Length: 305
Ligand SMILES: O=P(O)(O)OC[C@H]1O[C@@H](O)[C@H](O)[C@@H]1O
Image 1 (spheres, rainbow, N blue to C red):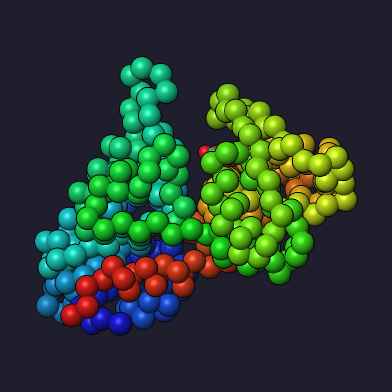
Image 2 (cartoon, protein in one colour):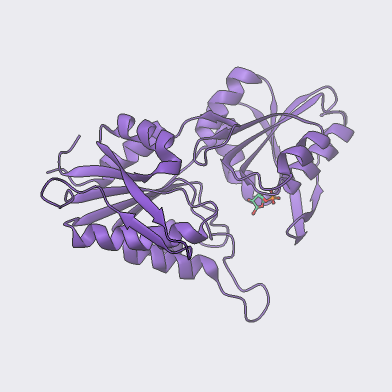
């Protein structure tokens, strides 16, 4: 694409980096990481023979399990600048720390704003997928970077559902999911509905099914679609209610496969069949790749030389 641009990645994301580099026609180079005995990190950036980096750097880091990755990004971005990068594009397919978007009780850190400003200081542009922005209108309200692109996994997941469960009823587990449900349903004309949810704790949610015609769920194939599954409790609770109301099958499709702890087991116990996700977070459930849409967004954001 552009000889002045290069994609930098970390070894645990080598596969998604190769897919993105290929789709974007960019060279990809791995950042070397060394962990000192005291747990501190040392990074070594893959410089050219002259010890420099290209003028444009695409930094790929999906920010699940984000704490150490934030330090890696700090070290990598500042070193890249020192070595000649004039423009840094952060591709964070999953953008962590976006869910704590207000102080729910007095004294709480509003992590979304704090981490957002931290990332904005490191890069010139950000590309992400389905960021968790329930109470702010635009991605740049959370990450005040000059150029920001928020893609969605809904259409890619809709294509997959159309192949695997044509005629399924798409259900969103909570009001926030209505945006992805509408997008996915419109693409293939799926019937759709959205539940309501109250959250009472990290693993405690109460879901209410939408008002549907009597027997609407009887014998129906249902696919639950959401931006992410973390503990899986939201989807499990919705699946349990759907099965109890007569759904013949309940499968799950999410953009971000966090699936922490016993999430997958909880889903299986709730009667969930298949679990599909995008490759924004590498996980055995990955069934669709976002490399194409990410590469198209990169083409828009990179400055042509
Ligand atoms: O219920 P778990 O899987 O822990 O959390 C994921 C849910 O919590 C919300 O913020 C997400 O949008 C999703 O609906």
